[in-house]
Image (cartoon, rainbow, N blue to C red; front, side):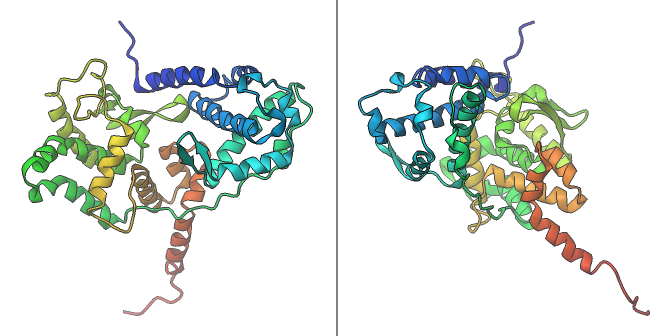
Length: 353
């Protein structure tokens, strides 16, 4: 029996092919680094690092007078020992606003941190193997990340959103109504699933129909790094999925997309951008003060679960966080909420009847 190629498998193939393409534009000695980290770094991270390192080397060719007239292919590992901490500080300033072809690129705190992390990993590899004698990346401070307020839907907003998705067609006419009716069950199933399980949008679009098990009310999701985990869902998610599957069975998928759980209007596996667009489309009818994305629906679920259970470890496990401190940082505000609740939990004097 032929092995089914999952969405995750296909993404790994795509990342690997793209990485090979980008590696062809980097200095030849960089290939050694990517071979060295192959078993400990995901394909997606390696591709991100390759892009980031290319930006760094292009900056050096552009800004360092000693490299004038050289190309990326002219550089050897010795270039790393010529770079000082001051060069890296200039690089960080450059990253905040630079030209990339005919586009202007900018980086905030997280973008700067990621690009410096790529460079630190790169330098560390060659320094540990004594291919270079200096490591200026450790002399440059990582950008400080300021935590943003977690945006989430309130319980009443969740109810209004689901009601709107279910009945939006009542106020539509013509082609808009036709399109809504065509995608109604799918859209309601996706939004209910995101709100009812907290899975990532990438995990949602990666689901195959075989990943849904109504005997246990569980879905098999592929987490970051390729780890698989069963996430369980409640009655509302079950009803929404079954209603969509009744519609899905009448759709003839395009070749290669037969196993996808959620289809686009082109009868292919739905993409991340399409899910982001449909969440935005419906949620802006519910709230104009909050910019709701699939990730905000994930935060909404995490908030509800933590409020109901008070178990930060359970929330971390269900959301697929590798480090509970990541979860704790996201839901620190709820600890304050629970402490305020505790203030009235203990009665010093019971009132007489």
